Image (tube, rainbow, N blue to C red; front, side, top):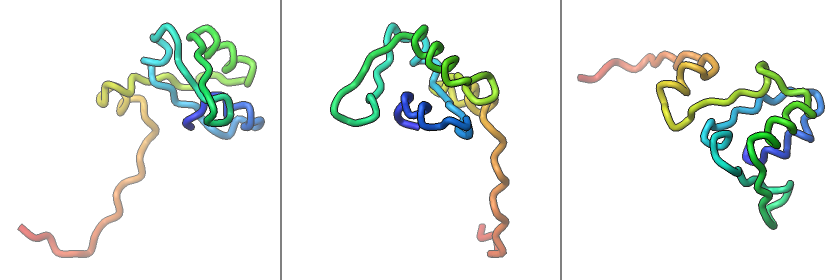
Length: 91
């Protein structure tokens, strides 16, 4: 999700919001207000307030340190294993 305010369209909470910790730690984070004509800056308190209003919890609102690949990988959803190739291994 590029636009945090788009969670208002997910009334059944089928989408999990994954937010970079740097947005929460910053004094303000900017998001488009449902179109690309401008941006709105909100603080961490407002981000959490919107999440609460939209019935988000730890199961569908996750904050990760995406700047740290090891930390993000530890919290990321399990990945499907890569498909096995029938091609012979070339060395």
